[in-house]
Image 1 (cartoon, one colour):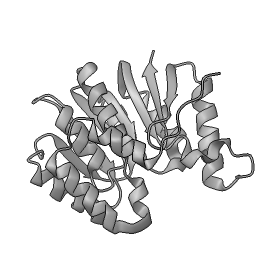
Image 2 (cartoon, rainbow, N blue to C red; image 1 turned 30 degrees about the horizontal axis):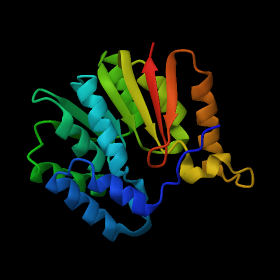
Image 3 (cartoon, helix red, strand yellow; image 1 turned 120 degrees about the horizontal axis):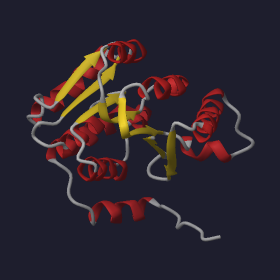
Image 4 (cartoon, rainbow, N blue to C red; image 1 turned 135 degrees about the vertical axis):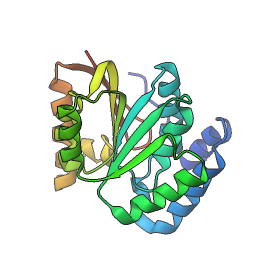
Length: 218
């Protein structure tokens, strides 16, 4: 069996240095998040951001939905890759941190592409479904305990062949460590098993950042 190389910080820095540069406001968000302490882990990695942008361009995505805004790095990253007519709705329940994200969206002149809604994601997804809203891509990076609910509800909103992408599915690598059985790790294991056995999508896990599951609706 072929073995993947070990991804060290030096190697990641090399990857970043040899990828296309970040937008100045992306850099601003990263610098801001460094001041937040441990919760900065809620931000996606730069490699994940580049991957999302590539997917958006390859799939010619126009309408995106994001569940979990945090300080706005992923939403802004995706918005930068969208065509001029593209739109992204990002959902979060945290008023304070959503306002931080909105300041970055404004600074990047992307307010016309990004609509921030501060509301319950589950209830909003149900409303979208009732109103027959559809999206080309849904990115989920929110409370892990509702990942299965987000997946099931998102299937009503995603177009055929559209993508639903979940972050943190490898959970710091703990999902494979038999000695670790805390609640959050178990939640991610159960979600990964649920996705694996689902027949409504085809899917794969990519070891980018903290792990991405890519689901294509059949």
